[in-house]
Length: 391
Image (tube, rainbow, N blue to C red; front, side, top):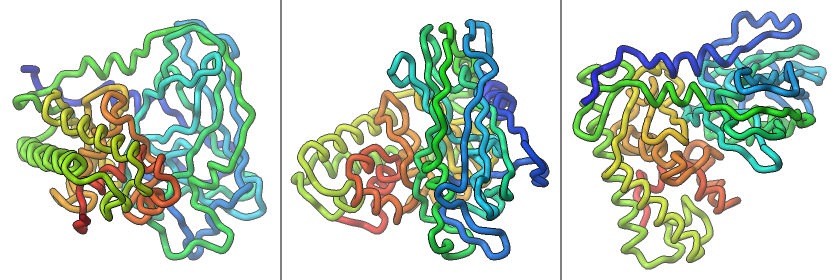
């Protein structure tokens, strides 16, 4: 049994203190704060168009090209509105939100290194979740590579700008303008020359400090971040619901004759024997993690636009946020389903990503790319929740 800790200092330092955001030019935006959802379509009256393809230019820069093990490795990402109209972009890409989305891909000697930062399940976008860049204006985000990426081996590193442009069901304020793109998609269309660095290998102190945090325990489930007694009780119920969901999904894939059933096709697309087997293996791993692993749930995140997040290479620590507490226990986007979503992200479980959010976007992903659907956490959540019921 481990004692209760008042707050997770390591998490707060990592998410808030180590990701800086500086405004370039006369933005007139004030401080960048708030919460944003990747890839939502937006078109708001009186607020200017959403980002269009080619509207944003991106550049990468670093203070040094050779860094020793004791050096902090930072890269500045500069976003510039190169169009003649205002554009609106998500805060979590540009540095105006505590829990940021990744915008960089890092390789060492040609091989991609592991991303150690958070993967986040968010609500549909809200008006306050966007920042407006006027023509010619810039915003800079400083990414601390030595916090968020595995730099344990010395070598030649290449840093690339990378945004997937995730689809999301939600729109803000109605239909997007003609020819407009989702904010995430507009960023995905942006390109920047790679940044080359030589980096001496080092340990990741942020990851290590999170691993040392203390927690209170209930059987194999532990709590950190100041979870109240009532919230601990809610989490226990949610864990039970998640285990039931994972068990039910695995049982379906085990006892149903493999074929293009309605449930399978809706969430994972065109049936093949290999893809069915992959889904079955993934849900077995998700179920076994709930049944057999020591899970820690942290309550310190209060962001009302975020359900939960995890660090994919730090099993089995799940950080629940404001939207989690208002979600139903079961059903679509439920507490139980959210925990299935988060559990699937861990590299030792199913190593899913977030390519699409929400029922409609997840269904469209299954139709357009069954392979990505099998790698998308929301598709796993909705398959497990099975609301409405599909056979």
